[in-house]
Length: 568
Ligand SMILES: Nc1ncnc2c1ncn2[C@@H]1O[C@H](COP(=O)(O)OP(=O)(O)OP(=O)(O)O)[C@@H](O)[C@H]1O
Ligand SMILES: [Mg+2]
Image (cartoon, rainbow, N blue to C red; front, side):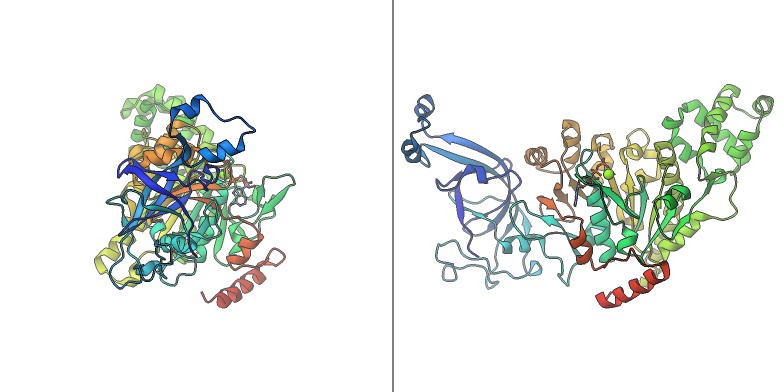
């Protein structure tokens, strides 16, 4: 396919980007911010993102005396010479062909001197970050399908685990994430409410499961990932959850069995936690929700060192008299301990918390993950922040410590069979866990900062990225961002991204649904996508039929068959 030349580079710099003057026959109205364009320099081909559009005039007299509405002739005469459109491009990647590698030479050119782009596979091409810019008057071209494939790959590339996350705004080609690169760092899905974060998350996790890039542990605050979820629209409709798409590969655990049963979820297992599993760190994380002071936390420490694991049970049993005696014998401040006791009583109302539990349910979650199953933990009615943060922290802390041990063993033996399976933990309302004031004390801060060292990474889903600690934000590998309006939130997205300034306008101009700017480790360059629709067609493409009418045993049998079919 020959690309149509749109304009030529008139000025620019590596740091500020390129200014391109459009040809008269090209309408500025077709140039949308976020578009992917190509500049053909003399030696290299530059892949660029359109960051701004403007109108120019050659002579101020035209502005002083603009042609009238009827005067189409005058407007046509002026177009291109007197008046013109310009666009700003941010060059992101360049490709300099090596002799004999199938890149255009004059003789192979396609007749317009621009050369054709004869590269078949992303693997053969070395795309480099831009170190220079194209010369004056280099041609700017509409990106061809092949350009897209060269940069963003394709889904069934046998050499990579690619997953198509969507399409560019004006073309029917896939934009893929490299899932192996995706899961090896912590990632974020951002956007204001209702922009499609949950749908994107469901897509991403489906891709990870389908391509077996990692196992997933999802803390499903609104119970929308495991089983059916509502879809906004004129009529009430639902979309499938992950267990329905991958019946043999996803386990649902629930912290509120009643709610889960009411929704008709099949095969969910109950999960209980006990007071004995609560550590000071967990309490500290929900300190704000519980209204605890620093003094109360200090006293919690004293109680813990005195009583050990059953400290909360012991505290809840104490009378005021007991507390006074305790404070006389040990250290501690009676007033603070009484207030701590009152506040911890709120935990008794959480459905999944028991004083003691004979069975260790977290162990069960861990076993499921170890056997390669993906786990979705539903909160049902227990989805307030106190409940969500407490359970999420308790479970993650335990699972992380197991992973650390496994990773250390693997480091020592270097035996491939000891290699832990990569684990991706999905959390919502992430800024509550990763706020600067607590991030250094919570397990999530630790995971985000230590990166892939222990084979555990986070997928954080959040509508207030500005609430996330800067250091954590700069460790986020891939950022998939839907529309954000708040200046501070937009700023946060570009923390630690060089050249981020150019991209701000792109982010602020996204549609309010199903569009996202993808940037970071899993894509070669930033790109704006129309998110892949999560619908019947997707279910089919991901390789699953309609299972909803089957019983559980049948589900498993069908899943096994389907797996064989798909050649897993
Ligand atoms: N990829 C998609 N495929 C189909 N529909 C989508 C997609 N993305 C978004 N939508 C539509 O947009 C609506 C809102 O999306 P979603 O529930 O994911 O928003 P959200 O960002 O998670 O919002 P909140 O912050 O309120 O949780 C969905 O109900 C659906 O109708
Ligand atoms: Mg959501």
